[in-house]
Amino acid sequence: MNKIWLIIQREILNRVQKKSFLLTTILVPLIFPAIIALLIFIMVKEMESAQPDTVLVVDESGKCTLDSTRRFRFIPLNAPLEEAKKVFQQSENFALLYIPNFNLDKPEGFTLYTRENPSIEKIESLRAILKDRIHDLKLEAYNIDKEVLKKLKDEISLQQFNLTETGEEKSSNSGLLYAAGFLLGILIYMFVLIYGIQIMQGVIDEKSSRIVEVIVSSVKPFQLMMGKIIGIASVGLLQFLIWIVLISIFSSAVFAFFGVNMPQQEMMEQVSRQMGDPDVQQAMQAQNPELMKLFQQVNNLPVGKITFVFIFYFLGGYLLYGALFAAVGSAVDSIQESQQFQFPITLPLLIGYLGLFLFILRDPHGPVSFWLSIIPFTSPVAMVGRIAFGVPDWQLALSMILLIGGFILTTWIAGRIYRIGILMTGTKVNYKVLARWFMMKG
Image 1 (cartoon, rainbow, N blue to C red):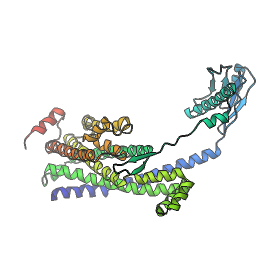
Image 2: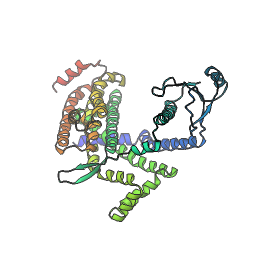
Image 3: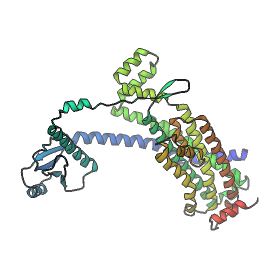
Image 4: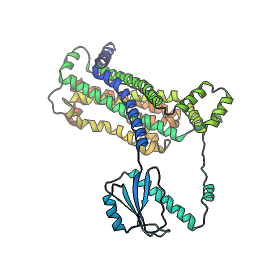
């Protein structure tokens, strides 16, 4: 165990002391807030300086009088279409809109002429303006008052509550749970894949430089493999925690600088300080009920449990896949040779990632979601995607036990390959060779 600890220390110090580690640890949290600040700045300046696009309109129906908006300025042309095309070509206007003499029950034949391919957003905006105008014409044709029609349309607010076995009601929000599952699942997928490949790269580098031949004279290959896996996992977790802290600080500073959501932040702080005062709660509820409801729903999330589950599955998934990546790294002499073995390893992880969108976020309690979160090779992504929706304790415990068992199994398999492959160079490796190394006694 002492030798494994020495390898862990070596891996941590070897990576933490590198300039690349320091740069990525500090620059990555700076890059995201900087990008956010730049995009917000550009968006604000663009909105301030934006001029409406001019659209020439040929309306043969005589029914579609279009009012100019902040985005479009409509200029009617009393000319035939062919003549209007020539006028448009000689101008610098954005587009020419042709409106035929259409049937109100089946409006067809609308055509937009432009010099270049406009964005889908602009096309949809124009389509929405025409749709609203046709809608108004139909109301007039059927003698329906617009104000009466507005009164007939009601916005229904559907509140969500979870009813516990003790009868306690807890506010819930499926959109918030979806966002939490989406974010956590993607983070697990990214970090397990990134740091797993780092293990493989590290093993290949040491094997190529023959450093490993010196190291294995003092420690067993299995101890070297375990030390490398745990060491890189520690560095990855440390870097991830630093990123979370720095990104939160810098992002808050950016939003504060631009004044984005500052009133809401002050409100949330006041509520958190004075949550025990019913009068304050009532006042805040009256001032901004939607924000208060969201704040209460965030408070109802089991943040401690979600954090624990995320860290457990991050480490468990990393150790499970890290052992396999280490075995591949020990068997090959270059990163190019490893490509034939990477896909079978990452395939289950990819299935879990795709299952996150196709099954888990759509139906977190369905049978496919259950099995994806139980099978060790897919559970790191699937379970963290489900956990915010509420997972029965027995399912969580079973998934954790199987993940630990899966890690032990992959470590045993990888260890048998690693002990032979780490000392073999210049050998053309395929799956048959790996199977032979695995079966060798030693």
